[in-house]
Image 1 (cartoon, one colour):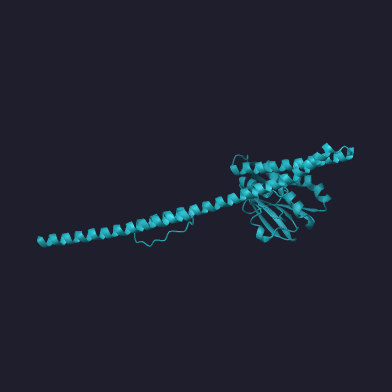
Image 2 (cartoon, rainbow, N blue to C red):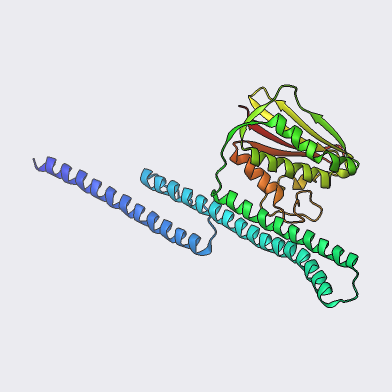
Length: 310
């Protein structure tokens, strides 16, 4: 009986010592984790915690902490990028508003203070003031349209839209302007009408933006094309293309970014605001579609839109 009691006491003592060692080790590991995590948060490095432990619960805790750190890192990067975009946006809008408003002020002062102007000169200046005021108005409307799209406040009523007919009418409305600029028009639209799920107003604006973009920045290629086709996957593809100077490969991934501009960029639809292609992309996405750019300078630059057929 005494021997059995001694054995049990010894086993119990071993268990207690083992538990104490394990708890002490866990305590040291938790203290280390606390210390490292405090340093990471203070310095903002978002590095991962590396602790080698055989304790399953410690490993689970480390996994959760590292996921949170990764999420915080990604969120911080997105926030920093948004701050940069906002600064660029304010700079661009300030510049784009200042330029036409300076012209307006200059002509207005001339009209007010110069008594020697002829009626023809006055009419010319008033016409230029009107043009510049419209330019400012377009820029402001574009900015607020983008803001509403990104905030989700604008609901697009999606219906069955005859994209074939819409494309024909849109190219017809641009035809005289295109030919006056020496641009050859190439249309490829199937005889049978193609219908998509979308918003007619949104699609009308998308076509306006892309055709204007190609006309302004692809005119040196002397050709502007529109192609519409039914894909095997049930989608309809709309393509606006030209053979102009194109977009450098290093810039192609960025042309749809909000407020992104570049000195010789094609995406400056509103005189440098960088809003046109961003609005186009947002509208296409709100209709459940996608848009991509492919550009080989002086060979073919195309914007391809895929929409669900209906």
